[in-house]
Length: 462
Image (cartoon, rainbow, N blue to C red; front, side, top):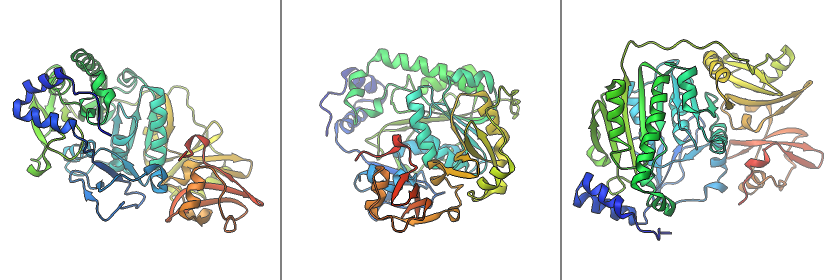
């Protein structure tokens, strides 16, 4: 449905001054149009590859795909299981910048902070890129949004991510100079959402642009302190104006001494407009030039000797060791138990990549954490109750459970927390349910009935 509210006149005049008459006319025409391309990004660690033969690749992201038409994602079990993420194509470009900054391959032990992470598109992209090489901290200061972020990280299932709910100043104070990469997808005036949202048009004003720019600088300043010398800083917004974009990057360069990161020339047919602000390489995605909505992204490096800040002393630790009997039970459901650190947090058992356990523990002991690693389940004496997160995790050893392949109808019944149509294939006790060989959750058979282990808050309503 097209927007019924006019694009703000003052916005048009602002962009006319920046782009000129001809360019702004094309921009406004695109923003007033109805074309809204749909794109997704696959989770390569789960092996799901495509949604259709008519799809086309997103050229700056090897896992990105434009869809010929928008399906009902909510009722696709692969989406619910973290097989892919629905993400605006332009937003995937931050991954290209990060890859370029490191010559195509991230180093072992890399620490990434995504400062304004909800709902999780860029965080899951960073987590995919990091893989088993390091740790991603996905932070969101607004708690309801942070809870959504935690759900999406859990679905993505890689176990290398920590979801935190902290003010950016907490990172500047507790983890100063600790991260190798800091990304700030800053809250902005939302000009890039004009095509999708009447609310974005209504709320826009020159005063709001200035307010956003001031807030962005506060976040950038705190984020910069969390970045180690020699580390990479990526800044992005979904807006077009210089005030929130190039002017902020020029401020960062002049005030903080940011240095240039060389980015190879982009193919002309990508349609990305490249600018420079002091030492910052900047990139604009305009909807009349690229297939998607608006985005600004920029990259710099922090000057100084390439050293990390020391890990702070632990505050009260949330972790407890698991006894030998319980540990044997948990290791039996993990694909790589020898490469995994298993600990308890309260009544729940969590698993972390052992190679990066020290880093993940440091963050969990310093920050307000909503989710981390993989929540494996709970132990009740010798009995083990698996968590829904384990089913969606790449850490799962599927052979540890009776696996039942579901039809689409039964997969949707499960996701709605309704009774399965045929329970004859279910063994007594815990069963792992799959759809097209992708795990989607656990259910427990008790005689002639089943008990879904999927959290009620995650059930789909369609």
